[in-house]
Image (tube, rainbow, N blue to C red; front, side, top):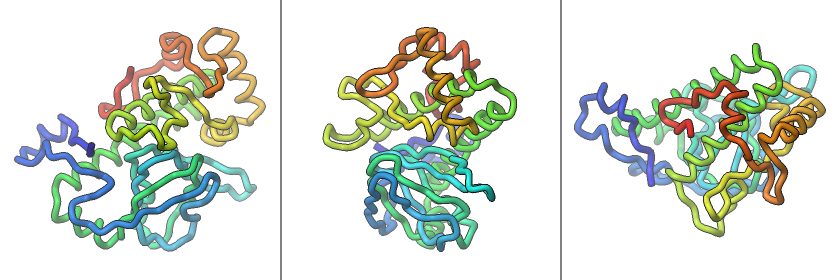
Amino acid sequence: MGWRIPEALKERSGQADAGKSIDPFSICNISSSPVSVFKSENLYSEGNSADHVYVVRSGLCFSFRYDEDGRRQIIDLAFPGDFIGLEALTQARFVSSVSALTQAELVAYSVDDFTRQCYDEPALSRALVECIAKEHAILTKRLVGVAHSPADQRIAHFLLEIRSRALQSSKLHPVSEGTRNRALITAGGDFNLKLPQAIIADTLGLSIVHVSRTLSKLKEEGLIEDSSAGIRYRNLDGLKALALWEGISPWLEAG
C-alpha cells in the first residue's frame, strides 16, 4: 500500500491525479537499491556525502547529532514508510547521522533520479510535501514541549506520539508475520513500546534517571505498565489528559 495524498491537498491541487497512490518502496520508475542495517549500526554519519534518499521498509531507525560536549540529541524516529535523508535534496553532505534501533531494511534512491522524478510526477511531489509537513508538525509540538512542559507531560506526549505513528505505519504499510516491525505491533494489532530509556531521554532532553523516575510515576498512577513485550498502555485517556494531547497532524490519527 502506498502513500495517499491527504484530502486537504487534493482539494487545493485541483489535479486529476490528486488521489493517486505512491508506493514508497518502488517509486514510479526510479531505480532503487535494497539496504540492510544491523541493530545499532549507522546507515550514514554526519558529514557523509549525501547521494541517496531512503525509505524505511521494515524496522525502526533514528536520526541524531552530537553536541560539542559529546551529548547525543535524537532528532526523530523513522517508521516503515518514512523518508530518511531528505537533506540530501539540498545539501551536499548529511547534517545528521542515522542509526538502526532494530535491524532495518530500507530502499535507497539516487538523489538525482529522485529529484528528476519529483518534477515529472506531481503525485510524488505532493507525497513529499505531506511527509515534510508531517515531520514539521511532530517536531514543532515536541520542541514546544521540551521548552515549556514538565517531564511527565513531555514523556506522556512522546508515548502517545510513538503509538500513533506506529499504528498508522502498520495500517499504511502492513508487513508479514516474519518481519521485525513486530517490535512495536503485536500479532493481535496491539501496541507495546520497546524503546530503551536512553532513546526517550536523548529525544526529550532528559537524563536517564529522570526518565526512569517519571516512567515509575506513570506506572504508579495506572497509566502504563510493564509487560514481556515492553511498556503496555493501560489508560490512554489518562495519558492524553496528562499530555494535553491534540493529536500529531491531520495525516495521523489521534486515537
